[in-house]
Length: 56
Image (cartoon, rainbow, N blue to C red; front, side, top):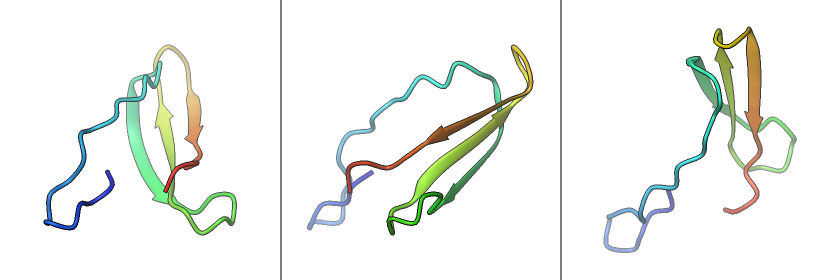
């Protein structure tokens, strides 16, 4: 979440993952200097979901 100057945060933004996440990591996956998310889940099947940061 983006931070505000007063130390608080903006409202949460929910992203539907469509899997039951077992593991989550944040890293710069595409080399643009922004943290992206990678989720690994087991249901409905073994899955990997990558969410690329396109905002801040």
